[in-house]
Amino acid sequence: MKKHNFYAGPSILPQYTIDKTIEGIKEFAGTGLSILEISHRSKEFVACMNETMSLFKELLEVPAGYQILFLGGGASLQFAMVPMNLMNKKAAYLNTGVWASKAIKEAKLFGEVVEVASSKEKLFNYIPKNYTVPSDVDYFHITTNNTIYGTEIKKDPDVKVPLVADMSSDILSRPVDVSKYSIIYGGAQKNLAPAGVAFVIIKEDVLGKVTRPIPSMLDYRVHIKEESMFNTPPVFAIFAANQTLHWLKQLGGVKAIQKKNIEKAKILYDEIDRNKLFIPTISDPEDRSLMNICFVMAPEYKDLEQPFSDFAKSKGLLGIAGHRSVGGFRASTYNALPKESVEALVSAMKEFELKN
Ligand SMILES: *Cc1c(COP(=O)(O)O)cnc(C)c1O
Image 1 (spheres, rainbow, N blue to C red):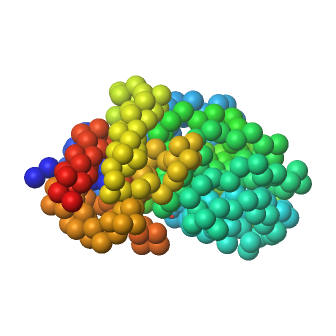
Image 2: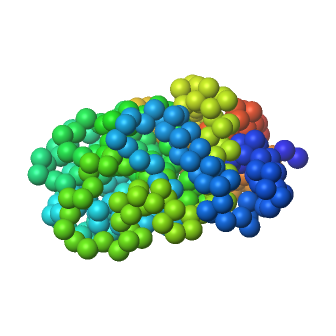
């Protein structure tokens, strides 16, 4: 039976990426060696790294003055690297979920954190608006897509201080005005590659302003100077990311994928709104994520949760359980998820409604 992959991360990758990665494991770039066993300093891999960086820049239209890094440690290490490299005294954070809270916790190790707003009291089911970012902070940090709750900041905010964003789960899903940000980072395992690599887009002029000593491995300037080759980078994950970027470019880039993402999300949200068995957890359409679509059983059908879960599994719909901290259901509709998978989920929801 065909499987539909709705896992939140690691998550679905394009078939193109899987196929090209299998080829690369057998033989990489005509070297007679596997990508798994080749030196990161070989000219073939250096070329792959450089191409991956330039494709990333091209697809996101990254302006001059910015560098791309591919680092180990995931997005979670960036929670600490950002304040370590940018924070002198004070930074502002928007608290929109568990990942944002984890970023705040790390930042507090390096100085004062101003939480400008939080949606915690409502289980993070909306994006706070009308907050003020103090003008004396070293930067303002947001999480554009809240993977666990299914909210998303789809419009690049205008602020007067350096803006930093965790875009782990919506990078490359839509055009972004990179010039509004000083740093954009994320783990690659949601929309780009297998786990093991984090991407960082960084405006160079934001660096060098803190006085604390920074260990070399945690210093963005070291990684920029060494072009992400200060130590052994995650070679395999970068190779796979390269394939996904080629796939996205062939497809027409981020504008083209955004159109598909909007279309897929609409099909599913429309059904959640229509179907009497389910209710959406995010009510404001403006805040609804196009990448992680969350819903629960309507209160009067609460005991159908496990039966629906089993029914979905029997139809090959995998990974739709909500995050362990919120329950219910979450369908992740990342770039690589085909529209047919969303349609399969919607018809299962319809069929289940008719049966009950
Ligand atoms: C998954 C995720 C993370 C954590 O990423 P790791 O690479 O596992 O550290 C951080 N932020 C967001 C928004 C995520 O979705």
